[in-house]
Length: 128
Image 1 (cartoon, rainbow, N blue to C red):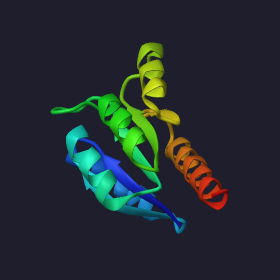
Image 2 (cartoon, helix red, strand yellow; image 1 turned 90 degrees about the horizontal axis):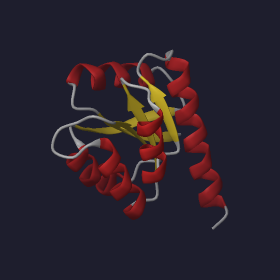
Image 3 (cartoon, rainbow, N blue to C red; image 1 turned 30 degrees about the vertical axis):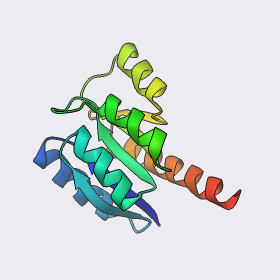
């Protein structure tokens, strides 16, 4: 089972993601966060395998939150964005995100990214 923390400032987006991910038998949404600051707290508290993080949010954006989470937690971050530009992709990668998925892509792209990121965590924990 791959555990997930969803982070998006839009409640409708979180609900939609939670419903879609909930259809998968190998994925479990542990919790939700409404901004980057909340994401850092929830990632430390819940210790998910994967964090699905929106880029643009109030209080603390997804890239700054990703940097903090990757430095302090043993989880992988997938950036989720409405916009797709090389600068944002680079900033996300530099912050530690393992994947970048746009909100316009089919849901299978996010599912694949979550499973790939989650399986890396399983391999990492087995090698210890």
